[in-house]
Amino acid sequence: MVSSAFADRPLKKLVLFDVDGTLTLARQSITPEMHSTLQSLRKKVAIGVVGGSDFVKVSEQLTPPGTSTPFVDYYDYAFAENGLTAYKLGKPLPTQSFIKYVGEERYKVFVNFILHYLADIDIPIKRGTFVEFRNGMINVSPIGRNATIQERLDFQEYDKQHGIRAAFVKVLQEKFSDYGLTFSIGGQISFDVFPNGWDKTYCLQHVADENFEEIHFFGDKTYKGGNDYEIFSDARTIGHTVKNPQETLQILKELFSL
Image (cartoon, rainbow, N blue to C red; front, side, top):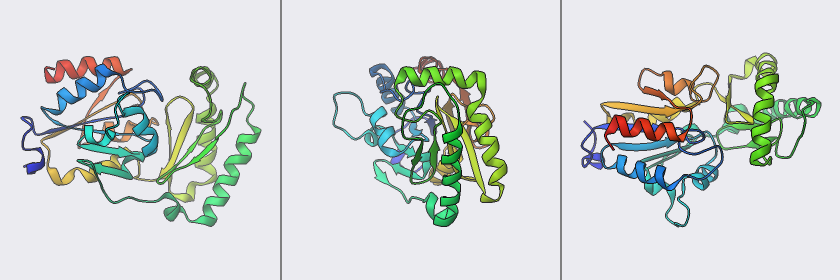
């Protein structure tokens, strides 16, 4: 039985969404059509977002253009960094820390190795911000997160042919097998590194108390090794794979009669 917080929803269900490639194009803002559809959906079910990026980036993408309303007010649950930064009905929930888990000394050894490896990678172009330190994870990008949208697209195609990220991850898995870390390739240009179990299923602990009849999850990187795989394949969720935001809209309209 769900709490009084969601008593006004006809369906006792929760629908969770990945951000990049599911609700928005990579690192771009939500469209008016997507935002409107989600608000219509929210009248029927509880909704939430679970992104791998930090809170600021998720906020930038999901705050509708031209509004000053915090994006968390448009969703019942808002999870950044897989739920390590979490909000329920606009109020923050307890957080976790990557650096506390790994420890400063071990982190230095780890990040130094990454930086040396990055320096030796030969790819067509490099930009800046190759390692981004977040609250619950680090994000590693061979091309650098400062790349333009076109440069991101070009790298994505190059990576499909040459497997730059997959090879990098394999080396790290072997070298730091005792660190208890998960390496997850997501988006166009990078991969995330976080403690085992801190994938997107981490957010499910924040919704367990509501005892929803069903929890649906929509994501685009649902294949093994993708950053949506664990929550997509989890027994607690009903998974939906989408190719892009347009397909998300199509499935939502069919599934929930919007």
